[in-house]
Image (cartoon, rainbow, N blue to C red; front, side, top):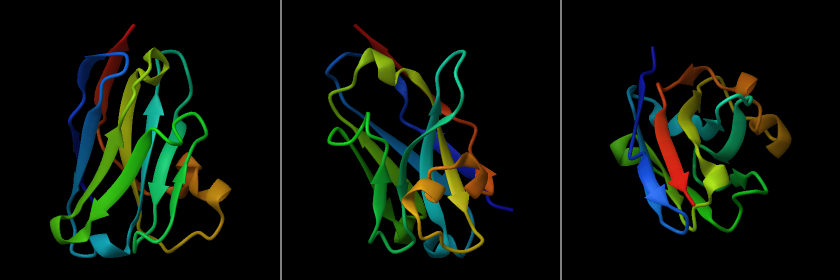
Length: 129
């Protein structure tokens, strides 16, 4: 029911920046909790950042805190991930995810892949050293 399309990935050097976008379908985007996850080759999918329906809460995994910023524009049905000071360990496929079935009130719970109902196809980010 909800379609998510990521864009903005690419090949960059360490220290560079990228801005990922996730365009969402649906008339109730403003009610969705949104998240970014990533999966590196041979590793499990991991949480990167989440943002609440009203942008009043944002969570980040420790490894990106201070470098990445999640934001959303509900008028455009779009969520963004600004990634600065990229490191080779940030190399992964980045996925956008939506939770449509109500809010979660614990940051750890919001970091779980199982909390989200819909996923995009992913956009690849490669950071060379």
